[in-house]
Image (tube, rainbow, N blue to C red; front, side):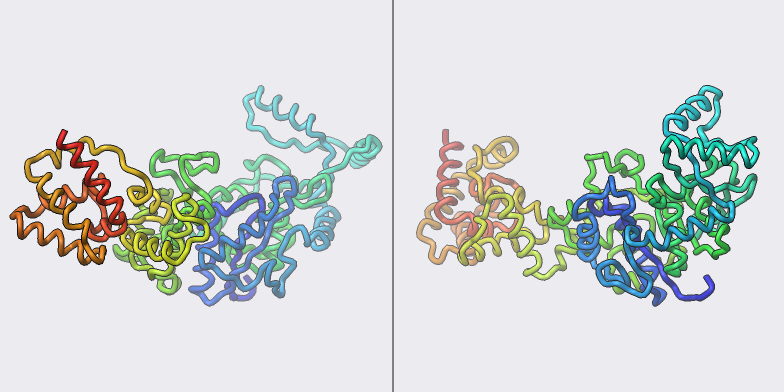
Length: 496
């Protein structure tokens, strides 16, 4: 760039919710800008009106903010290089398209879709890669003008195609991939830079926008590599200097080894889905950053401020990044453990309400009970939606004890422990975890039964589970009446 200012952008299309891959692109650009004291810009590429969805832009921006990103210029806050929506920049594109037409670097193409399809089929039949064949090949200027006049007389609307130089090498030093080059003869012929309605295509608009917005570096997904030579041609045609490009590795499924596809419903791929499950934004930021980038050393959990300080684009990986949902759960669990109680309480309470286990407008007593329950499971939860399954014993009547749990309490000491515990909690006052703990210890002292043979029968009888959070707290939250009922049912079952 002529100036040395660092300016990067994230340029989503408002065609749907924020995808993991797009969130990664935004995060890498954001960290590069913040680390280098540069500017991070949001630009909306909304010219493909057929694919745009209602509130698509709003969803993108809200989810970026949820992840903790802020930007210096964008459609919502403005800036010196706007407009920041492509649909509002047509007056900028039109004269530049006309300039290329006037200079003979682009031309109007009247070939219909039916003709183009027929050309491709014929090329396939000859064993050739499908490509656009120059429709005015071999014509004199007079014949060319006559062909254009005939097409216009039929009412045909042209696209504008860029005239690709023959046998020209386009190369760049990619920040991630190293040296990359394409021969112009391999890209499929003259490509469209404006549609029949006059709307510019991606490869034209992105060059104009990046140049006029003084973008210094472009970090984007590996799937854009094939677009880069086309964009370099347009930079060259205008005599503009291109930004530096960095193409980030693909994200692949850890289970299948295949590229993460939006059509693969076995993997949650949209930020909103993780928000709805009660993941923490800082954990999502941390996990996404590690998809194709690695810090120095073995540690993987850092704050956003630490990431900004340590970020180094040289540590972007050339190898595909594995999307491992189990690792995401582990990272989120680390954040849940360290999160303040009010944050966890707020998110988990919403999940309990959503799951139908807590009324939509709970009273103070219910909220306090839910708070104790949530704190009981805080260290175990990987994400907040798990609270409904983890704590199901507190909401659903358990089935009869069976399997390993039944085998565990099928011994001569289990009825002794349960009868003693039942007798004592019926008159326990107050009925809380402290008194319940003392009661269990008193049974140990009076009966001589201890360890697993003491604690496990009580846990299984009250919760019908062999594992769970602290037993005294669990019994308190089940409540005296249900605890008594469950113990009686269990005693009836093992005494049959």
